[in-house]
Length: 467
Image 1 (cartoon, rainbow, N blue to C red):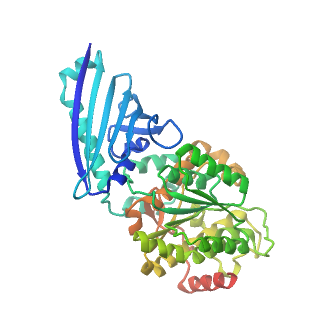
Image 2 (cartoon, rainbow, N blue to C red):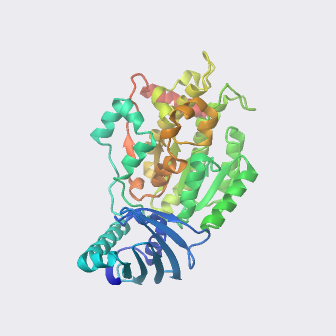
Image 3 (cartoon, one colour):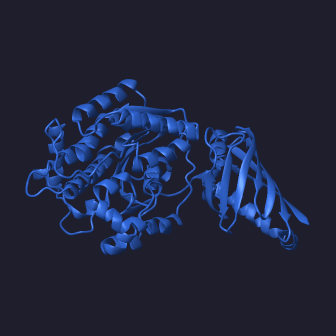
C-alpha cells in the first residue's frame, strides 16, 4: 500500500535569479529556511550540479538523501529523494519577474505503509510542511534582518563571569544558534583575504566561504601547506578562485611586502580576516628585534590592515560596504593594555599574558578603526570564537585542552561568527563591536582592564612609530 501526495507552492522575492538559485541549490544550508530540518550535509565533492548528493537530517528523527538529476542554473532543479518513510520527486522552477524572481516548488511524495495510512488520514500535514518551508525560504531570501543587539541576559552573564565562560563552550554555541537568522547573501562576486588560513579557525573559515563561492586569498607562512589547502578547496567545492600569498606575519618587512603585492594587483578586498596567531612561550624575539607575540598579534594586523585600506575603500565603493574581522580571544578579558611595555620586557614573561594584552590592543584598534573609517563605509568588528578545539590550543595549552576537551567547540563552530561577520547582510550595518555567537558582548568585565583615552592615544602613537 502506498499513498501519493503532491505539493505545489510559489513565492516571489526581490532578488536576482542568480542569487536565488545559488542559495536554494546549496541544500547543505537547508536548515536555515526549512523549520523541519535539523541539518543538511553535502555528500559529494566538486561543483554543484547533476550527481550532487546531500543528506538531510530531519528533526522528526529520520534522514533524506537528495540526488540532483537535472541542473539548469537560473531555471530549474530536479531532485529525487529517498528515505524510510517515503520517496519523492522534487522540482524547483525559477523565473525572472519585473521585481526579482519567482520560485515554484512542485513535489510528489510516495509514502510506504504504515505511514501511507497516516498520510491518507491527515492529508493536510504535508501541505502545512510545504507552506512552512516556502515561507522560510522567502524570509531567508528577503534578507531583511536587523543587526543583533546585546541583551540583558548576555550582559549579565558576562558580568558574572562564570555564566559568560560557560557560553564559550559547545553548549553555549548550540544554545545560541537556535535564535540565528538565515544568511543568504551572495558572495560569488566578493573577494576575501584570510590570514592564518591553513589550520584551525582560519581553515574552517576558508572552507565555509569557499563553499559559498567567494573568491579567497589565503595568507600563510608554509607555501606547500597553503597550496594543498587551496587545491583541496577547489576539489571539494569546485571553487577555482582560491589564491595563495606567502608571508611570515611576525616579520614586519614581510607584512609590508604582502601588502605591496596585493596593492599592486589592485583587486578590491571586500573582507579582511585578521586571524593569524599563536601563543608563544617562552619569550622570543624576531629577526627584526621585536617580541614575537607583539609582532604577530598586534603589529602585523595593524600594519596589514592600514596598508590595505585603499583596497577596502575600493570594495566599499563597488559593493556598498567593506569589512574587517579581527579574531580575538576571551583571554582579552583578563588584561589591560600596557603601552609602556608592549614587548613584555618588564617582570616575568608569560606567553598567555602577552597574548591577551596583544588581543586587548587589537580590540582597541577595532574600535578606533570603526570610528575613523565609518566615512569610508568600512565596518570593523572583532570576535571571540569561544573555546575551540584547534591545533593551536592543543600545542600551546595542553593542560587546558585536557581539562576542557569534552566541552570544546569544533573549529567550524568556533569560526561561525567569523563567517557571519564576513557574509551576513546585517553584519555590515554595525561596527566596532566584540562578537560571540553572532551577538555583541561586553568588551570588559573585570575591573582595571579599561584603558584611558590617553592610553588609547599613546597606543596608536606607539604602533605608528613601530610601523
